[in-house]
Length: 428
Ligand code: EPZ
Image (cartoon, rainbow, N blue to C red):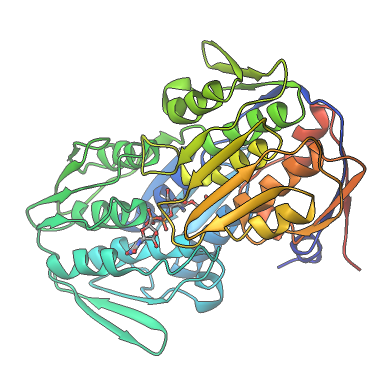
């Protein structure tokens, strides 16, 4: 990791608040589509996967290092990534990379399907509660993999995986993705019931189809994958990032400005746009552009995070930030993760009034927030703290920005283009 990246890892951001944000930002490719699709390249033997629209993010570089460790050769320039996968690759993932990012677990299904064996140290990444891999492992076991958990790592071994009928206990995004990829090289047909329906799942399914794996039903709760012997080179595109788009729209709303996001189909953001409108935000949609503005204080609403197409958990902290300044009370139920409300403590340092009852946050709107030093605990909480800093009076110092670089390409430039007054402070 170069000096520059190390500096980046611990940067702080000084935000001068109180200025409305106005303008237009272009939306990056979706991090949560690019990561599983990069992992799908593991399924290739002596073939090439070419991807356009890949965002240049810290997590993307981590996945790139993981794939290169396995033996792939990767070029990545101006959002175009070319992944060349040799006939033979390693099947053990490096602990130092897996510990950094939970999405490393997406290598598990492709590795055991393609190599007959996979060793994965139990992953790290954002701490959002327990986040086990039991749905992934139970599904792979149903397909014939022998699963062993030992010494903080999981080993999965199999001859050729067999198609199976798998019902997920919860529509887990990662489990759906891992099992779709494993099923692509299994013998026979696999049905995944209670599958996740996120747009990122459909993007992965589209790339698998381009590689020669007949995948059907993506976007519904039943996905059917017909396994094949061998996949082939393909070229595809990463869909736009709906979470990044929501974050910038909310930056405009929280500062009483007007932000337009460009290059995103509004249809994959219905729940977020609907909830913002319910709170009093004016939303205008024109082709692939969405504009959010509000003429005055918002009103409190009830938000319940749900699997897609419900309100996305990845925009829960940002929405909570917006509601800290609304008129009245808001109730926020976090029902996807069992511990994704820890950012409340940092929000309260800025003057937000929030009570926590189990996994429900009761937010009482206040007239203003006062800048201070805050620390981000994960990617989306960090983004939400920046939004609060943009709305608070005086200055807010957001620390531990390494989380934020994982998911937001060109964040500083994009916010400055909207009028934000921010400085990055390298930590000595
Ligand atoms: C993906 O994580 C996203 N990450 C997350 O985005 C997102 O918050 C999450 O889906 C939900 O939408 C990527 O796509 C790389 P899950 P994932 O499996 O797949 C439990 C961001 O900010 N669970 O759908 O890990 C789990 O604990 C990140 O970009 C099990 O119990 O999420 C959670 O409570 C954060 N056992 C719930 O299911 C399992 O085997 C949903 O998790 C798997 C999951």
